[in-house]
Length: 145
Image (cartoon, rainbow, N blue to C red; front, side):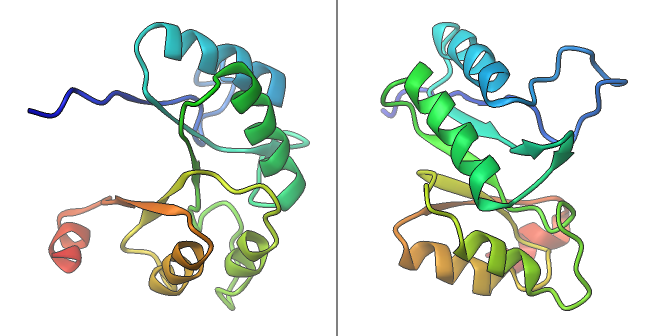
């Protein structure tokens, strides 16, 4: 029997208005992630921020990963790849930003109903990054089978 595996999502696209303690900076993410691991988390999922906004840009993502990894040695970290973070009518910006990542997470959440998600997944798998399928609707689940 496999042991239970608890993944904790540290922030997401939540605003400070929704909860004043949402961690945004690398230091806040590290502190809150450490607390989650001490409480039993075995995987950490997070969204990187730059100047108060979610981003997929390389340096903010790398800074968040470095801080969390230093605080939570050996705990896998998952980053978001949500298309909502970097809206782009060409649907190429997200792939360009992710291709620029210098520090790679162990895995990413890839929302299966999003445009160009399969191309993004192929790119990340080619770089050794694991994929966890984000299923935001029944249709996404049916399409992934």
